[in-house]
Length: 406
Image (cartoon, rainbow, N blue to C red):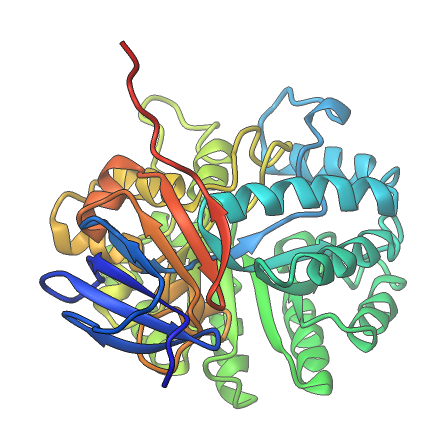
């Protein structure tokens, strides 16, 4: 096979030594210590060549709206309330502009696949959905985007929302998402989201158990319905911070069930740490799901950005290496193998969470990112900058190293 180009002297995740990677027709065609032949070459210089990073949980529609909201409490209820007020004024062009800015930052930070939620309800209408469909199409050569039609503010309390979710699924939404903690009937909410997922043959993604009170968890109902409906491997759950307030043995039991039915858990540390624990007297808890404990039982876990510059998270730059590092800090990870797990949670495991693959192997899409690091643990420790990326073998961005002058 004639190669389009070769990347030499690259460190690869999970492999010792330096490697050459040959790319042809947008795919990885060869991996070897050396690849001979007259072909265009890129010298990785001993840096880490990774599969493209994967953002498995983000809200593009409500990003970058700090100038339109007021944050006084820093609570989840305030964030929902303020965003609901702001989104009533969103226009399609407004959402397109803000979402495009975040997508471009994500691309420059090495992200090549993304799942974004879009709120669909009487306030947002279908405007944000229309905007994100355009973003998905316009940036398809740089990043693969899934759009999740999302009921942020409940179903049983707003009869208009469910028909709108149906319309979005009919018009190309990739999956459906629910938020039982905002619904007066959380169990019914879970059932209705699963009904929609099965009706359209799509995956389901829930925001669930987003507080630090261990009682009245909705995750067990999601696990039960996943198993009953044969939806193993097709369900993701974001936040799940109640697990942080549960005894170790109870978490182990839930983790075993998650692993058995293939329900994944995504921690969103920038948001979870910002919003939770504000009512604590004295020591403020680390309010995020204990992913390493879940992984020890075989559950699928990932880390993601969630929100950027809005009431849920009033900071952010769509940089998954920063998020992986934040998670590693608050989870108190230090061993190379644990930091490698944090890296997997924004690459290979995050990809599995959204039904994709992120690996460098012969025959896979050449979605490649060159990171200024000597290993995956080094990349997490130092929040390294990506230097260059290729989407399906096509150069998608460059960020040359900075240098000291003088």
